[in-house]
Image (cartoon, rainbow over all chains, first blue to last red; front, top):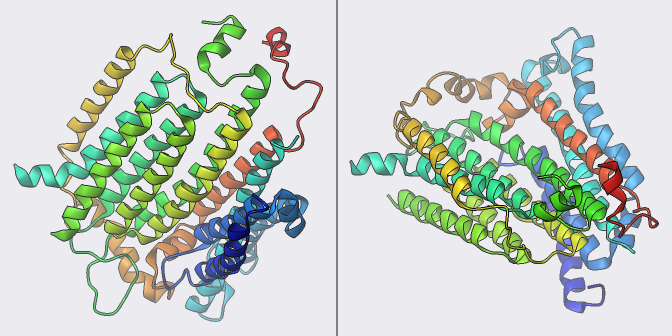
Length: 139
Length: 119
Length: 191
C-alpha cells in the first residue's frame, strides 16, 4: 500500500484535519458532544491511518511504542493525581471544587485535567494495541 | 395495541439482536466469529440502555437556552464508557485468538479439541 | 413522527445485518458487515438523542475494532469459517429462544419507548439536568456527569482500558519466537 499515490496524497491532507478535529473534540467536550474517550480514539485513528498508508516503521518513528507505554500510564496518573491533589487541598477525592477560587472555576480545571488524562490513556492504549497486532504480522 | 407495539419495538429488536449474538457465540466454532457474536450481544445492550434513556420530544442533553426537555444523560455516560472498555476487551479477546492460532495452528474450536483429545 | 419512522427503519436494517453476519462464512465479509452494523447503530443513537454515544460508537465500533479484527484475520490467515460437526444448531437455538422469550416477557412491564414519566427519568437525572449549569458550569451534561458527578466510576473505566492494553501487550507484544512457530505439536504435552 506504500506505493499507492492517491492514498498517500489523500491521507496526507486528511491526517492533519483528523488530528485538529481530535483536539477540538478533546477541549470542546464541555460545550458540545465530545470528551476524552472520543478524542483519544479519533487521534489514534489518525495515526493508524498513517501506519496503514506509510508503513509501520514510519509510524513507529513518529511515535515510538516506548513513549506510548509511558503515555498510557501518564493518563491514569493524571486522573488519579487530580484526586490526590484535591485530597491535599482539603476536599474529598476527585472533588474538583477546591481546585479553583470559585466552585465553577475549580470544576472547570478539574474536568479539563481529568478529560486530558482519559484522552491520553485511551489514545496510547488504542495505538499500542494496534502496534502489537501489526508488529506480530511482520516476518 | 399498535401503541404498545411501537412503544416496545426498540426493546424487542434489542432482544432479537441479543439472541442473534448469543446464538453466534454458542453455535459457531470459529473463534473470530464468536467474538463478533459477542460484539453484537454488546451492541444490543447499548441499544437497550439508550432506548430507555430516550424522552419523546427531548433534545440531546446539552443545556441550551429555550429547551426544557432533555433525554436522560445517565445511560449515555454508562454506555459511552462501556463502548471504549468494550473495544479494549475485544482487542484482548482477539489477542488470545492470535496466540491460540500460533499454538494450535487453527482457530476452529473442533480442531483445537481434537488436538487436545478433549471432548 | 419522522423520528419514529427513521428509528423503525434503522432498527430493521440492524436486525437484517445481524442475521446476515450469522449466516455468512467469509470472515472478511463478516467483519465488513460488522463495520456497517456499528455505523447503523451509531446512526440510531443520533436518532435517539445520544450524540456523545453515537460519536464514540462511530469512532470505536466502525473504526478501531474493524481494523483490529482485520489485523487478526491477517495474522491467523483464516478467511473462511469451516462448517462445524460438533455444533448442531438445535440446542443453541432452543437456549436462545428460551432466553429471548424470558426477556420479552420482562419488557411487557417496561414503560413505553420515550415515555417522559418513566421511573428512570424521575429520580437522579432531573438533578443532573437542572444543577449541572450552577454546580459545574458545563452545558454538556454527559461530560459533567462523566467527569465530575461520577468521576470515580470513570477513573475505574480508564484503569480497565489501561489494564486491557497491558494484557494485550503481554499476550502479543514483541516479536514471535521463531523457533516455536508453526509447531502445533508442542502444546499437546503441556495440555
